Picture 1 (cartoon, rainbow, N blue to C red):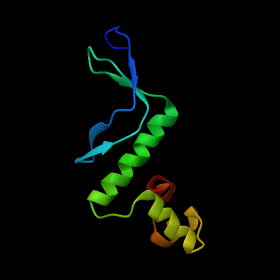
Picture 2 (picture 1 turned 180 degrees about the horizontal axis):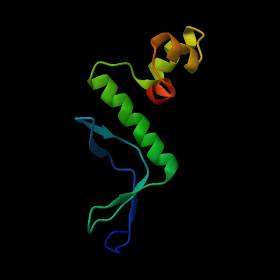
Picture 3 (picture 1 turned 30 degrees about the horizontal axis):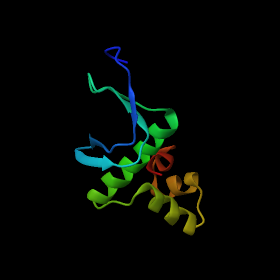
Picture 4 (picture 1 turned 60 degrees about the vertical axis):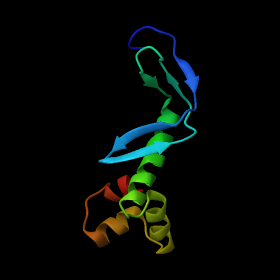
Length: 98
């Protein structure tokens, strides 16, 4: 889209730096321009990429992954708002964590 060349559909790995950590995600359908290197993807795939990147960053930094935070909260029988109140954080902090 940047240079006007035709984009090629692929599910090649995507490597990016996220919060100071290099992460590689496999299996995300996206489009790449072989001329300029620009990449594009639909909203669903972008959300999946962000989720997988967050999980990898958490793991590499020794933190709970979003799914783990959600599982602990649910195991405790708490809503996001209830957990925010207990932790003394503003809304929608827990939502962003999860």
